[in-house]
Amino acid sequence: MASSPACCIAAGLAADGMVSLMARRLGERPDYSAYRFTLGRAVHYDAALLLTHAEDTSFRFDGLGSSWLVQMGRGGGSHPRDSQCDEMDLRTQRERDLRRLMDAIRHLRDYDPHLHHVAFNTCVVGGHQIMPGRGLRHSGHFWDAMVRDLYDGDDGKLWEHLQRAWSFVAVLAVDAAILKAAQEAGAVDEKAEAWATERKLLDGLPRD
Image (cartoon, rainbow, N blue to C red; front, side, top):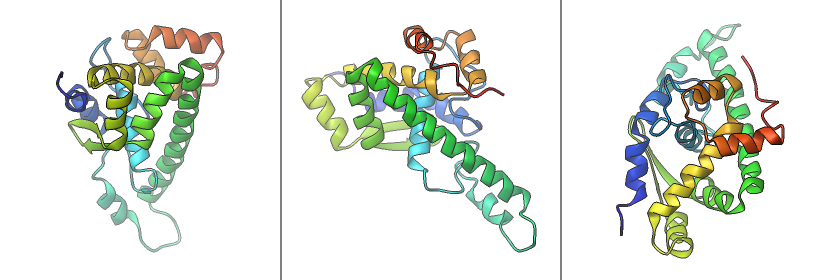
């Protein structure tokens, strides 16, 4: 059997993870490319962060280790400190990103029910390990069950389908400016984009 895609995920997303620590918006990266630095890979990694830290009020994309900075900004006084205001803004943005992410995953069910089943159970319900600066690794019961029951032990095929699923989700989940930057670099799934465009699903993407 080929090498585990769990390892491939960690290696393939390593650079995405490093950049994500400096990003402020879902899927945002300074550079994209048609293979390694695709929009789908970026959103796949960021989605894991969002889902893992959904209840963490101090989480932010631009620094998983920033909690101590937030804590320093909390204190007395009649006016909230800058860090508190910044935290509230980021929390509002994170909640918006989560809503759009889940909406995109629901549209994935209409686009390709099999990809939806695989991505939802592996990435949303299933377990993963986030390694800041290195990437993420899928594991656990759902991953093992998918590989065994749906892919006859071919975890490489499962990883391929996850890439396709997140390439679709990314098109609907990110801001218009981020989508445009990825399009210009050839880092967007053209089939997914055409499907969404035909149904006018991109018309409502937030713009700067």
